[in-house]
Length: 318
Ligand code: AKB
Image (cartoon, rainbow, N blue to C red; front, side, top):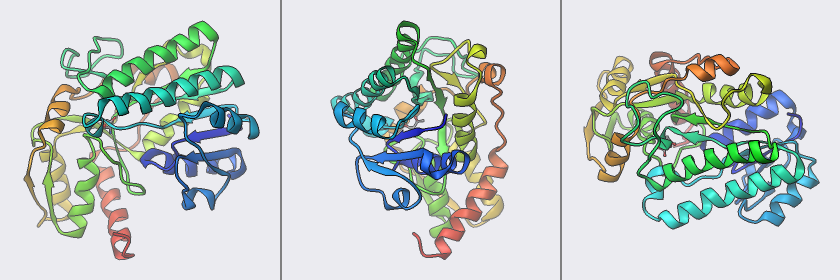
């Protein structure tokens, strides 16, 4: 990877992936794009406004910057997708189809994240295997499974170098997530620091896989740098580092903030989604095929999140 394009760079993952990749490959070699102007991205390196649903503008940008690797991060997330399934399909699949066709046309490698949301009620719930039943009951999950299949198809049919991971809920402190079922695991830190209280939209007993952003960024780089001859799978790898319930994270935060209080106002849409997802995924294929090895756990992530979020609050950033 030398000339990288990030599509949807203004979101939770893109905003940090852009800086991470610029740190590794050099600012000028990482072009960030988003459907809106993003000052924080254009100040560090090349930036273009790009609607990923416009194939001409997308192809023009790839050609102009001589791109060889694309990270397609455009997505409407699980909870918000349920409010307008047609829109979610059009955005998620439209951006993916354009990415696949442009990667094929310009000979680019393509990374598109999948998710724990690709699994459903009929998938084994604990240590969900890499290869298993996948019948999600959200439009987001339907897009993810379709995307995995299409990406593998473009690899076998046209030789496009497509690669992907199934991300857990990502916990981070730069850009807030929006519209996901796992968002509570970020919001809890902001509310704990700001007011010492959090109202949780997900029931206290529901386990979901989560991951701290530095491990997620490392996964993107490691997978895209992996020796292709070692990849038995491609789209998409289970990756995991921690799994917890709202009650477990509450207890962990209380070790640092003993007065922290949490109550519940369960959102039925989020509850249904969360209960249909794995409690935890088996990531042994990622470990074997490309050396996936997370470094953060619940304890270290919680301590670091509280420190970073407190620093933001002290600076008056929220
Ligand atoms: C969501 O909750 O929709 C996302 C995801 C797990 O893919 N964070």
